[in-house]
Image (cartoon, rainbow over all chains, first blue to last red; front, top):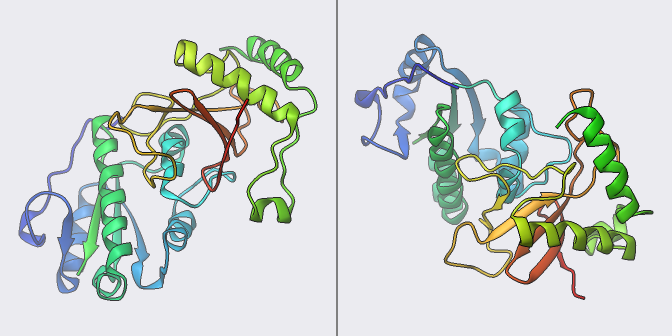
Amino acid sequence: MTTHWMQQPETLLGEPGKPYTVRKRRLPELQAYLTQNQMTLVGVDAADARSEADFISLLKEILVFPSWAGSTWDIFSDIGDEMEEEWPFPLALIVDNYSKMLSRNPELALSILWQLTSLSEGSRTEQRQFEIYFVL
Amino acid sequence: MGAGAAKEAAAAGAKAGAGVEAGTNAASKAAGPVVTDAMKAQVRTVAKSLKETGKPPQGIQAGKLTGYPRGVFANSRNKLPQNSDPHFYKESDLWPPNGFKANGKPQRVEGRVVVGGDRVWYTEHYQTFTEIID
């Protein structure tokens, strides 16, 4: 459980409040800020994902998931214990090239935005900081 | 639950669902899991407990969705009928076929039971849902 709660670097973000977006040119500054604030940084390249299952596969490459976990968003109904044990909170996930996904597949991009933001909010209710940054 | 109690519960569960085997061959996965009669018996036992107590029987783990009470299935992809109550669907593991870890926690596998109202489904980690009809 997190006692320290990182404050958002609002000057680097597109709008105050979730979902957090950052322009590509400001990404190095954001990464430096997050590191300075003891967040564990992980990143995925949204340009590589063509489907929900693709995107979850990318998450599985950078975060620990149970071997039996499926590949739909519904798996998050069930793996809260495993996330709590294995994920390095406080955690920042950077979704790079999100603007490419938005232009290529807006339905998928908006779905991912909603699902990840919901997961982030759920973590907050349990005092675990899990922040998502969508790179535009 | 301690390891001893968990093992006793598992033995009772195994008796309830003796001979359970998940349908895990490639053909069955493509068309949805094969749910054997023995598995259906186990699913019904777990579903009954979920309906009556809101919890699975002793020795079985219900999963956790961060930010929700344990055992809630959010149906975030609307694969099951939508409902106004975000806590309407409950989910649980079955009895762990591979037993328990040294800390007493079950070694989980992909099989899950989902209950909503009077309806019951078996799912292999939410890829497909097979309704269990009496």
